[in-house]
Length: 233
Image (tube, rainbow, N blue to C red; front, side, top):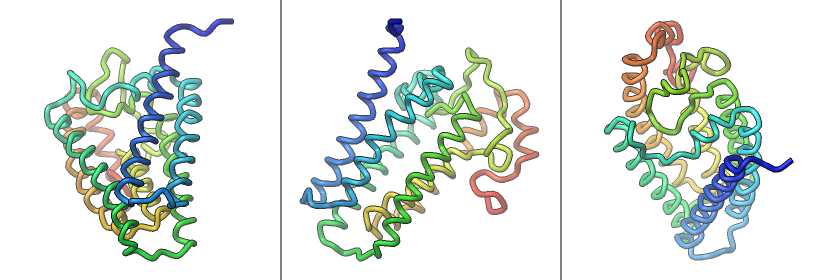
């Protein structure tokens, strides 16, 4: 049986985007570090190159509509202006984060135990598994803030959403913690508060959109008090 052309285009786009992400990340890390001799960076890149297509194929099998949504650009026409500004700042911050970790490696200012680096790899993998859990529960987990009325979007309150309202960001905190640990960069770890602050800025943008346009979201927010970490915030 021949694959549908739309399927082939989606898979090709997935592979292309993952390749661009891995190559771009590697270029920023290695150029700023001034060397290719960085074993933990190669581990990060190899793991990312493997997980991207595998997770994408898994998502295609269980929810192709969500995969199509995740592959769309981070700046979209029906996206609030505030979220467009956020995404621009977020991308710049992430690029700066990668360069900072490379520069940290260049001047060798960080000394991190191997056990911490192994922990970092574990957190990186955990962030991937956690994000897959989010995707399994929420078919509307788009990369941008918007209402998906064409897909009959509704409130999700199961899985991780039973504990926090924005579990995707919780998983991203694991990612932004695990990667610098794996790379042995205290500079990268020091930038975690920046990303948490950015998430704290975006959450009100997202919640305002959902409260105004998604029936039942206000009641859900009243039931689930915490945004990122149960019992904390």
